[in-house]
Length: 180
Image (cartoon, rainbow, N blue to C red; front, side, top):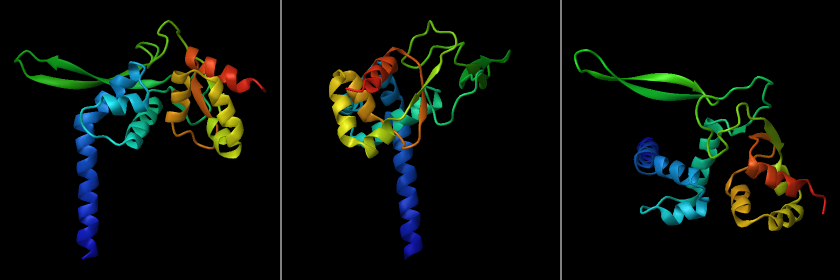
């Protein structure tokens, strides 16, 4: 009986992932690129998606696109994305080919497209959040709502991460660097 239960659990998880892939993943990423927070995305969607699933998707999206790196970047670090190009042969058969694109060629996710080679800033929000929660909350209160939502919506790990340098993270880090 436990084997059937495990199979059911695995099937339900696969079905849930498939449903989210088809219905929600693209919408969550699109709305995040428009500048919406996880709570705003949750309210905007017409179908039920748990808020935690939205936060996880935003985190995965930032990792996939090189906005956040878990390892320290090299000096010549370039983020690679894959896009699919539609091609039609001489007989009219349509096929898709995966093309590798560096982030320098395409637009940066939610960032400034004018920057050629973005730098990264070391961020330790997770460490501060769990080891010094009062200090973390005090600094959050100094941020405007959008910046505060950005910090609180993401599941920052305890170890340092590197965030692509942009106006938003620079504003946030300025507040977090202030000792008062």
